[in-house]
Length: 592
Image (cartoon, rainbow, N blue to C red; front, side, top):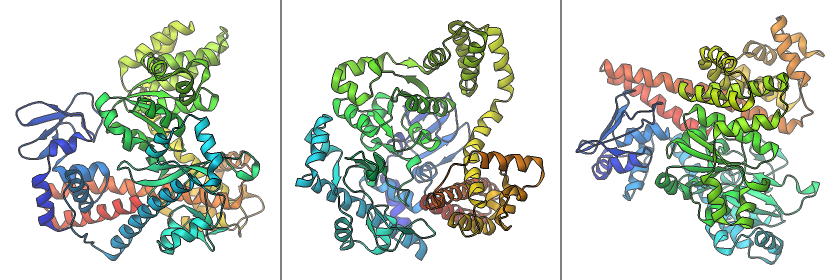
């Protein structure tokens, strides 16, 4: 992008307004504004924005720059894209885009086509909701209390029970590459990248469609609810697969519509289902968001932290909902969110509660939400209701991991005192457990990241012990052999590399070397469920993507340090090389 256009945008951009969309700022001087730094954890504001000179600086972590570098760092995008984002926020028309390479131009072209095909699909589904075939879909929405204005606001549609009509309609507007990369179509076979190979047919059929939008409000994926409940219809809810546009763990449903209310009211209501989110939003509680077909993730926590650090969690009261709530609480409290939990009377979900009791009753329930520590203590009492010594031990063991995750020592001590009193446990014993855990707390937090990676390792181990001709085995072995750096540092890294480069034997344990590797492989195989080969291929692909993403993110951190060092040495040439590599990695991460 031309330097003169960037300068024009910078001159017109209000840095306080732009950064204020990401960080809650308060005036702290004639031309200075301060807030909590988004680049490191802190409780007292050390992040400063100077309106006169248009720069930001953090006195804590020493991050600094202008409006472009702020957007670039926070959004993890290259400089030209940051200029475009700021220009769009300022309402400045964009010039014709220039690219640094044919690959960059191709990637941008694919993303643009994917946005366009999702918009076209949304309109197509919206139109079919009005068709005679969609009568049952309209009846279902009416029975759920979804009025026409809600259908229009959330662009709810209907995918007809037809394999080919949508494909033929989209084929007139979009090329084959966009069709196959969109996730809107399936085929009986997939290529090495998981995209449909061969004849295409519609992925969503005889389903109500709910568009999933990015933060800017552009549709990037769909959730589709089946109208029938028989085995032939498949799962009740079907989600788009991950695409260059859509990574489900990075998206919060309704954030595009809720973000202004979240900032204004300084809290977010986190619900589990999209219908819950839609119902509550349209009833008047607008700072509401939902997870998007996945458990709450660290990426979603980081995304939400740009808008608020206060969250009320209202998941379904069944076992799955309670477990999901616990995981969400863990992630949020580790990032120093103020978290409360609401449990609705009668075990109802938010959608049904609002329809049966009204929005005023729901708002009252939100106002009486319990602090997360009280919720967890009460849950421990429900899970282990007896007052025996054994039950008390189980209750304490249930609570201790949650206590350890709290970043504040005062919060941990209060949690212990409250738990000991309500569970009838000697608080001195709990405090001793806490003291021992506190010494290992940093390692505990790190290990939680490794635990997430353990499932990646298990998937690859399961694939690598399958027969030589199995597609999952071939894909895993080929990629690990080509990229041994992906498995460096993993608990089973040496074993994975050995399995990838050795023939499969009748006894998979033969590949293990030593007691530790034997134990690892035996446990993986002991808990192995019967898995369809095609499904395992997709799991393997996602696992390898996770490893590659981790490698690139580590390299990103190294490059930031190298760029800072080059700046200190006034070595502009080295700085340019590091910056170019960092930009390339950022592009690759967006497409991964």
